[in-house]
Image 1 (cartoon, rainbow, N blue to C red):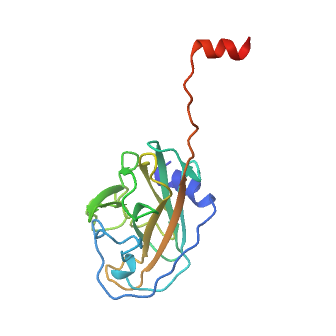
Image 2: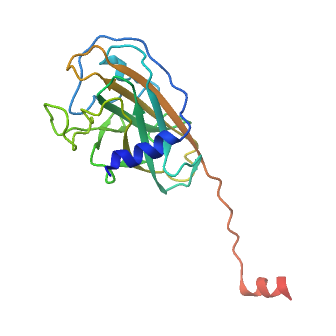
Length: 218
């Protein structure tokens, strides 16, 4: 079974997060990767700056796998983004993770799990996004845009390593596009979605001695 089928089944079974549906824009499509700073995060645009279309019926889920609501500083987590949209046939995304305190970059991304994703960097932020092998026709299983997968669901999986202790809450921002595959900038649907993870509280460690232990239990 293909990775996308497994991940999509996990992702789309989770509770979908609230969507922010942007209006139409006129621009041209971008491959093999989207431009940086297109996640809908503070100070950024989204996929709607390059793709124009309707709001559509896309379902977008952004979740940790397995699901968590908080992170332990320095730990690594698999994050999945899944989408489906009736009538669409090509797909894309871009995401980043920022500290809520100052909107600076939070943690790091790696793409070892899924070869359909890659990373970009710009303006002090790192982005994870779809990639492609330069496919000129649908149906290539290594194409990161899953061109030729009608209606979805499709999904991408990447690994995020949490920032150090004291970073505070972190919000993931992601923008997606569902395309009709006509190689034009019209007829596509774009959305944004986000997910916040709270920094886990730490348990204070109190030093002790063998003498203190004996005294405690005598």
